Length: 321
Length: 91
Image (cartoon, rainbow over all chains, first blue to last red):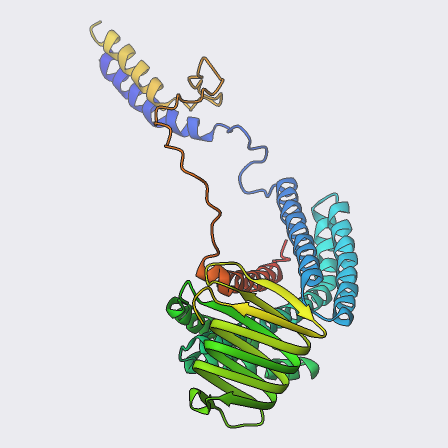
């Protein structure tokens, strides 16, 4: 009989103990379940907001560095720097509002004010970011054009690359017009980025085919005045002015107001005007007037650069003329 | 009388299984020596080769790497701004 009662007691114990154990307060829980812990919520939100402020400040710092290092005009740089200073002052205000909040209610009120401040600040940030991005993309397009000239001078077919560059360029010009009219360009910028990526992919394809012979030299120059180019070469001459090629059969000329001549083989080219000259091979380039140049005697060397305001003669190529 | 030891045994068993977990941290075996020892190098020393100054790779020479870097940086600044703009002011 007693054994049965003991068994019943045991079962009751088995049922009761887990529920009692579960109800026991656990370490770290100061408030009973159901009641929000405002102090904890306050700390979490304050930390989150302070981290966000810090990220905004870091972003502004980096943007400042990028603008300083960019090829933007001095006027644009000064204008952007002024904007960044204003944004930094706004962020300082936002930081103070959040930092001074001592409890959940104060933080909630502070965030309400921050929200209003942020509307203007984020608009300014976007304008600065877009202006910087457009300047960067302008530079990138110019670099891609340089690459296209170099590939064409070497003898590669650059039609696809030039089409992609022209496509990106027209979108860039549309964006510039929209910005001048105060229109939103966020979608257009994404479109431009895609087009630049496409042009860059074409450039990378051609770069894999671009393998100048080690004995070939390379010269790239801009001249306002006259020039004479002789040798065994592949060359591209672009610009405005008169150009004579001897023999004429070694040249192909593109129609248009701008001279674009591709020369292949043993040739002698001379011209007067404003030109960009890119040549691969073995030869001599003499320029009179003003301009700049970079060249390497052999393909596996590094480029040497310089400028001139009277005359200069550059010998390029490590092989026989 | 025979039931008593069984009762006690079962009681201990139930109490043992249902007891709440101790809040104190379980002692984890700490290594006796806390200093990190650098492993003895067993790999053979490579045969010294003459250092040659690397020539510019074609992509470096053409500026492909720089263009890629500039594209990535521009993209990064814009996407970071998007993240900052997506801040939630709900408290």
